[in-house]
Image (cartoon, rainbow, N blue to C red; front, side, top):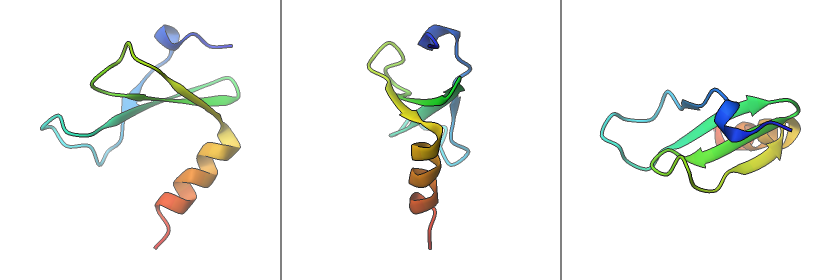
Amino acid sequence: MDTTDSLAWFKSSYSGAEGGQCVEVATGAGAVHVRDSKDAAGPVLRVSQNAWAGFVGLATAK
């Protein structure tokens, strides 16, 4: 299992520079980790790669 401090976190390309409501995402062995960019030490949501792909597919559907 990955520790969250060893992960390479990134923000969405849609995140603005004004520090609004952003999330950061990191991929690890068999999982995708999601956290609040304003609270890097806070809780982390860990989901399977398939679950994340399904979420992104629904979130980007037109």
